[in-house]
Amino acid sequence: MKKVTVNTFRERKEAAEKLTMITCYDYSTAKLVDQSGIDSILVGDSLGMTMLGYEDTLSVTLEDMIHHSAAVARGAKHPLIVCDMPFMTYSTGVRDAVINAGRLIQEGHAHAVKLEGGVEVKDEIAAIVAAKIPVCAHIGLTPQSVNTFGGFKVQGKDEATVNKLLADAKAVEEAGAFAVVIECVPAPLAKKVTEMLSIPTIGIGAGVDCDGQVLVYQDMLGMFDDFVPKFVKQFAHVGEAMVKGFKDYDEAVKNKSFPTKEHEFSMDESLLDEK
Ligand code: KIV
View (cartoon, helix red, strand yellow):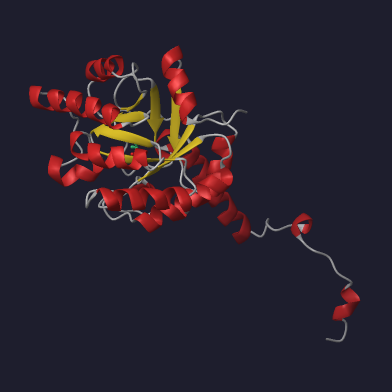
């Protein structure tokens, strides 16, 4: 299997071939993703919800991201690893943005970083790119702005938000982003942005015409049902299989059908005589 790089992203856009991205947050799952042929892993700050049980992504720290990204990097050798810059790690100035992005690469061993926003973060994107760190932008429904949006709401349904999305898309491309995630916007708008940009668009809840797709792995494997968004397709029912496995184990221990001889270590039992 070939290693995926930012060049692969560029080539796929030129060849009109789709890109795949999936979230991942740990070593053993990264090893499984590595065998799948998926092009890119996003160590998303969605780990705040899926792994840590927060209500949103706002409590996730840079240390959390470094910890999870390094684990993923130990397990995945082929996909391009993109690590999210969490809330408040790039909005306090260009210098902070570059230093924090650098830590995700040096300590988290990611290949690229992702940050949310368009026009308002163009200087941060340009500075991180100038520091030789590839940046994936993220526009549309940007979950770190949940309190500004007043909830997790589809973006681009009125003229103002359509204009904002178009301006954001142009700004991140001009700033040097190598790709852009477009989250929760109507499909015709995502199509327009995809046609307008020379960098690949990676959609989530943005229709079939984006250059690629990203999903949260627990959502698409049917492992996380706190909230199932409309745009999710469950490609497997791993959650059910896990609950069944846990129940079978519980029952087997309690009815003494596990462990059996095959799971035991033997010894010279005379060593126990007269003890
Ligand atoms: O954190 C994340 O998982 C994301 C995806 C929803 C794109 O940003």
